[in-house]
Length: 253
Image 1 (cartoon, one colour):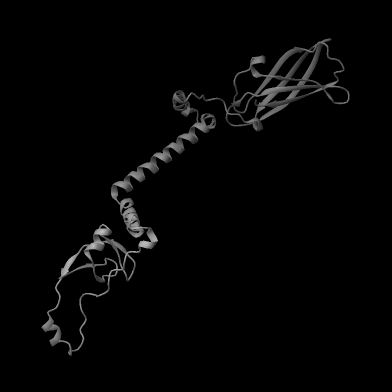
Image 2 (cartoon, rainbow, N blue to C red; image 1 turned 45 degrees about the horizontal axis):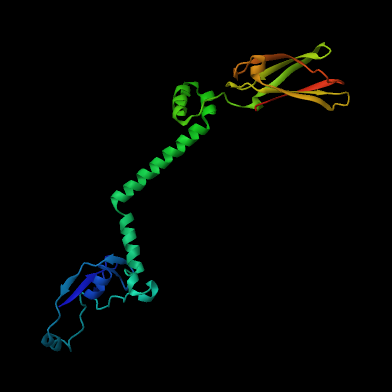
């Protein structure tokens, strides 16, 4: 009696040695198609000697089992015997593990959680833009920011803010009043900008530069969509002489 196993890919039957099976923990590699599989052994009846003699001169018949031998384990490729099981067995075990339904389900769940985490990061990063374009999302965004210690602020879009007009009036020797008309061209509200005022001399060289924040002239935090507001404030420049002109610039700090 001998032990045999059949390759599930090419259906070739091989003789196997029990010691080899024990060494590879039941895993074998087909010598015909190199498929790695877990051997399921059966016993094959050896033909009787007399029967073999009677049929020696008869016409050869196809036998149901191949006599190909199981390829020897490559011990040199995997190191000394202590490194068993061989590499092809380790690969087969790994493939079998990752093919399990439970493992595949866990991987799918991990991918879903990763996608949700990425979507959450995008929402938090774009919260100001979302609140400006979809005001109804404001309560949800504020609730989301509360545990994250962030806040929802008006959208900063300086490209949508235009200075339509400005004027600098001298009230007395060291006092001036600046007026700036700000126009929001966007269809959504945007953050109120700060104003940079630069006083220049007759050669258009800077003499004094000052930044005026919205809170200094009592402005709201946001410019309503498609609207215009006028910023006005008074300041003094004691000790500064030679003022001949000015420049104004709107920007978001």
